[in-house]
Length: 114
Length: 115
Image (cartoon, rainbow over all chains, first blue to last red; front, side, top):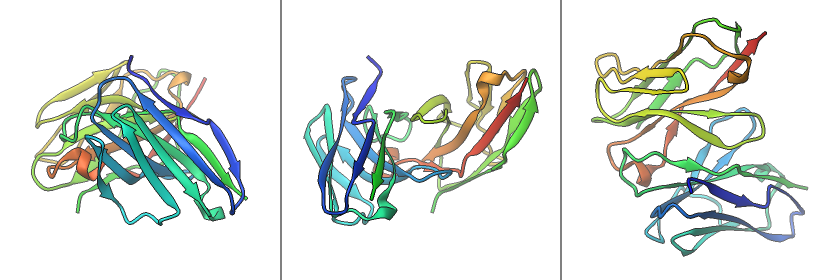
């Protein structure tokens, strides 16, 4: 199984809502990532989990809260988002943090904040 | 810091034409290099990779060679198809630990193949 799955595929939320994005992989990978991608732009790194510990937080606003319940699952909790947070949120995983390991991406969650 | 520069396009070609998408990078040491492809409404798919100088990555008729002397990783395909229409991202994974820094992406090249 070389797949990274993400749910939901689409999400529309108001600025006062709380929602969560979910990501799952069954490749035995020990590093997982959240990226944000705006239209016609490359993905931007938000968070890195390595062996279930948060290792990088790219100064992302606190309205985004990551969680890694176990080595296969990665969540992104959303609260009090702004319209400019509307984007495609991509989850990725890799065998570990070493530079030569490719990252496998999920299909993404298309988020719209009203 | 690390950076990747690639032609942004859009690049429009006719079916069966030869494709080159240029990619150059700036990085400390010996990064790993990747090409990813993104079809409309989808996530990124790894197309090919190279982890050391002079390595050639290849997949589905696409090729790219890691050239340290010119800090380049140009993507080529001998005969493109309409189904190759997509956005192509060149990316690197830095010497400080690819995962720890995530991937550094170029801005992406939108490729349009006309029948």
